[in-house]
Image 1 (cartoon, rainbow, N blue to C red):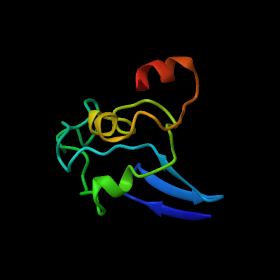
Image 2 (cartoon, rainbow, N blue to C red):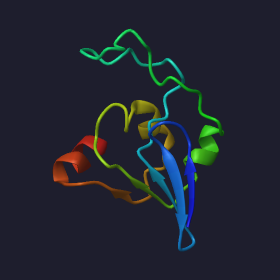
Image 3 (tube, rainbow, N blue to C red):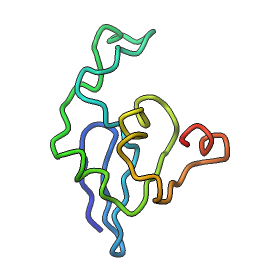
Image 4 (cartoon, rainbow, N blue to C red):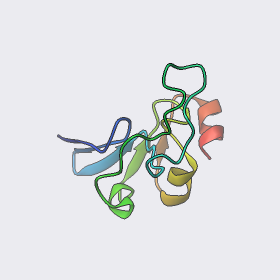
Length: 99
């Protein structure tokens, strides 16, 4: 097994000859306003750049979403990830939200 953290949420795991993308929060650094009600609500997110090209990040066999929150799944990911690969989510509600 190989584990590669991309930034705070997204990571790649290679296992059994397959490559998985976990929690693909892929927006550009600072693209999203801070999260209201937090001590750092003034800080724009994500706070770090992607360290590898987006095309490399989304070149995977499947995606796993631990939960559908804006810091785990965003419009950049929705637009960049191929629509013909499997998505693993917790339940039907998350499946509908991630479509």
